[in-house]
Image 1 (tube, one colour):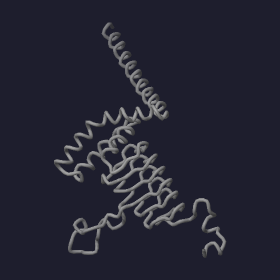
Image 2: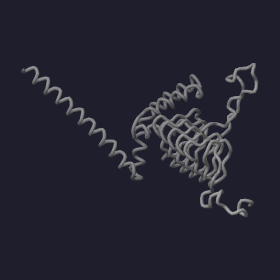
Image 3: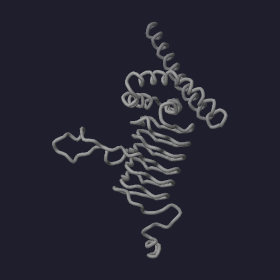
Image 4: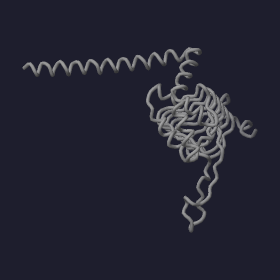
Length: 243
């Protein structure tokens, strides 16, 4: 009976410690989120995570010299993508400011999102949701990229004209893709062409041709159904359609 009582007390103590740890972690994350809303504190938090990320960046630099950037960058992108929570957001932001061609100070990159090339450029206040796949893309200021979005470097990355050579060995072209400022790309959209500034791309849409500024595009392939600030194209008078 004495042993059973002791075991019971031990299990109770472990549960209490576990709950205390969970509460402490939750409070720390909440406090970090609240503090980071203030400009000065946000700067300090970014500075702290930049210092914490420097050892990772140092190892990355050494490996890039030994093995080449193109070979080691995807693995590092996979590694930092798996850091959960708000800590992961800050670590990814700090890491990519050293490793991408450009990464805005307030860029947010969600869990599981990957970059295939270090030539990507992120502007100020860019938000990238969870589980996105991004190539050598330029995402300008104030863009919103929803979860599970793929941004390809064009549609000619793999040629398949010849039958005597495997597709993987046929030369392709990597087109630079730009998402214009203040655009919103919906969930699970596939982008393979340029998107003009202040555009909206519907969820699940496949963009295969360049979109003009302020376009609202939906469908597979995506077509422009409206311009922001203007009446819907289908509802426009005949004279407007001819202009």
